[in-house]
Length: 328
Length: 95
Image 1 (cartoon, rainbow over the protein chains, first blue to last red):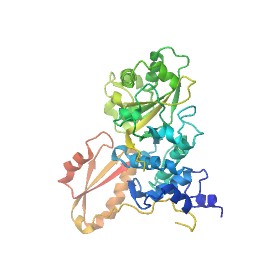
Image 2: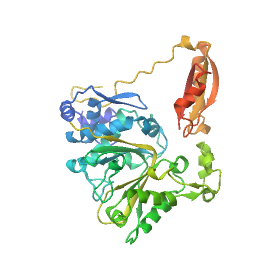
Image 3: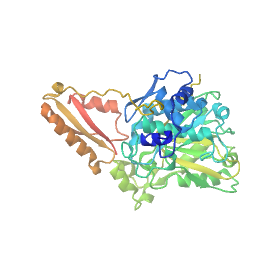
Image 4: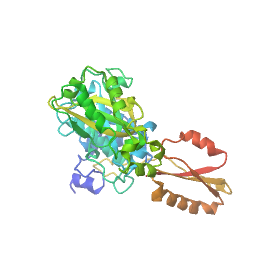
């Protein structure tokens, strides 16, 4: 049997063809690292994610060996208790791990931070995101028809990896306590991106006002549970807002990105909250509710093409986790 | 599965989750906790009823507890609060 078909028959793929994980390819991916070293125990399967298992999945995804430390870092982040991997993978909701890469490794490995930053075309973004997803499937046990019951899911399940571009703003990983010279992976439990267009804007308020208007839309899990929000500013939007710090942008958005409970009556939000045991959040009709509990849960990065006034709004559940990338 | 050519990417080693020794459950009080995100769907109840049926031959006795799936008391605090009343807890979580 053809090796690619053999991978299909074994149930190893995400639906797309994979690079067959031959022994020689896996050893090249390992680069002399100990195959049996356990990086993490991943839920819901409770499986040990060894370097060899991660490497086999990275090979299948099409990663180059130099990408391997990024994949391993993402696996370590996924296993952090704060991330809540078991809930992320086994919920019927659409959230799925999104990998954000920061630091010098972005340039060194050639991540795309230009046009199509959240799309196709760049091998590091495409294959590292896919490798993480294959690990979730083949090691953590999130398999369709099994422990992964997503009602709809979103296309990011194939690959969901983003790198932050350099800008006038403080990089995300520095805001999270790492030095600029450290490379990091941040893992988010992320819904699909919603691309907000504010074209030909002249003032920050035009952009931020549009984002604030979208933040408390009915129907997000965030409105009930208040997780995090990831905003991907295009360079154009970031330049217009460059007179403000990220912290000031967050504060602005937090104050205005809420709505009174009374405005949700009739939209099914309260019934959803009842079902999810979160009705008390909506008892007071004058209470303002939004997608985050505090301004610092609004995460801001810059990426994308120089041309175009867009910001991607990505609702995220729970808490994101940042880990350093350990390069040998 | 590993062929001569391909390295198996599937997990093969799992963290051990040994079941509670039946002798320890004899006559003990076991908490059954429905902590599903969507309790109205009844999946948690079904899981707990199955658990109760499976453990009943050990002589265990059963009590019901509630735990909010999200934003409730921290897990350790909640566990401490019921630890004096139960020998074990079976918790259904998910959605």
